[in-house]
Image (cartoon, rainbow, N blue to C red; front, side, top):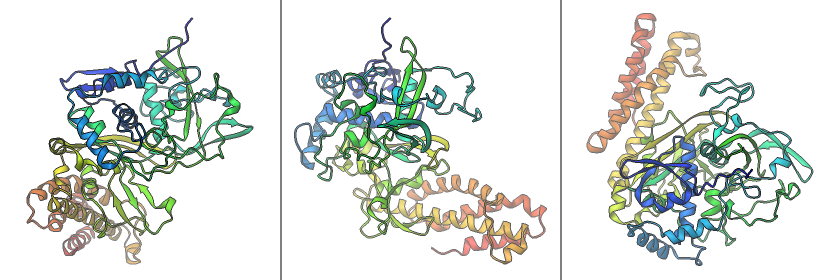
Amino acid sequence: MPAPQYATDREPCIPVLFLNGRQEYLGWRDVLLHAHLIQDLALPLPPAASGVLRLLVAMSARVSGLDAQAEGRMTARQWAQRRRDLLKNPAGFDPDAVHGYFDRYIWDLFHPQRPFLQDPRLAAQCEKRAGVNKLVFGRPEGNNLSWLSVHTDTDPQPVPSEQALWHLLIHHYYGAAGQCSARTVDGRTLANAKAGPLRSTLSFHPLGRTLYETLLAGMPKPSRLWPDAEDRCPWEEPLSVPDPDPDSGPDPDAAPPPVSSPGRLLTGRSRHAALLIPSADGRQVTDAYLTWATQKKLPALDPYLIHHVHTGQNVTQRHTARPADADRALWRDLDALLLAGDEDGRKRRTGKAGLAYSVQRPDAFTTLNDLPPDLRAALRVRVYGFDQDDKTLNRTWYTALTPPIWSWTQEHDPAAAERIAECRKAAEEIGQLLDTVSKSAWSQVTSPAGAKTGRQPRHLSPWTRTARTLYWPRAETTFWALLDDTARPAHAAFTADAVHALRTATRPAIAQHFRAAEAIAHAVADLRDHRP
């Protein structure tokens, strides 16, 4: 009986939406061959789509010649001109280059020596399998309850191979930190994994009119800061042994290869290792090994993340990615995308710990001004977020899409960019003040003794929770209106929204609590008396 196979470059594993409205599943190879006819990816799992897009950008760099190491170092000007020339080609990527690239490597999900994005040595290095429910996000495993699916840990059901690929990518990019399956390498057994490179982050991607434009627009620019070491994606690494050798595994104390761009930057920073166990025909995955891949950090600034720059910290802690927050609307991040540098401190903010930081635009956005004018005018931004904690808790994932915004950038319309930043800042200030006054009012009504001593409730009060829920959707409507009405003061507009939200949230309490009316009146006065 032939060994199970699932060649991801040819098997229908990536759902896409064509320009004519047709949705279809394609392999990696056909996605690039038809990229100029595809409108967008159609993966139902946002963190998987985030990983797929990074892999496709790395593959596109190889087949397009935009990989600076393909033909020696290019200058930034040469690179930008080559990208503009490619964008003029209505036929998309060169088919011969695409086929030549995919023919060179192994894409089989179940290959005995080189399973795609997996380590075959885990079968000998791990005593126990993790189980298919551990592989699939949202399924219960161990003693966890079943919240997101009808599956049970006592009767794990196989997952289709294409979906197993999606979840494999989520583990590589957003995998958990902490306890994992024990893995023995060179006589040393470890059962602790580090968090994935994108864990709990918010990912921003320029979105063109076709997937072809999206991949080229989102290509990281070449930089002399990257090391001269040969840049490889995981599937491009040489096959060192004819059979998986459990004694030649990675040394957990050894320094990993230096991060280079775009291959290792976009596809080679995983800290998790996996090995999928297929069904006899390769159409399904029935089990999996999931464990650690390296104990060392792979420091790099992902080109699709907004970074907070803490100038007072040491080099390793200076940049932190903006976290994903399902309760935070996308418009509150617009100014971070539209404003350029931070030389004059206009984007300096203060974090929860009271430490000042500046905001750095995603690196992939720094070359968008070199694109043709018609593409710049049409560019939108696709956002993928996975709201997680730093360790193991997964809250929810989500995606969002902006309108065309590049005409509002600081480089093209400084007044519009500054107005957006002004309105975002005013909305944030009033939102924080609303939290403060609503907490204080609640404390005065329910715990007068605590209010006199100045103690604030540790958790959100019911008034604060309801007022916040009412304020932010209303503030979003006001935000977009203020962009057209530039003469209207932003603080006054958002203050009116906060007052309306507070009064609506506390209206039932006036009839229920003796002191409520007075406390609410003071809170409203504090909102109206606030000056920026």
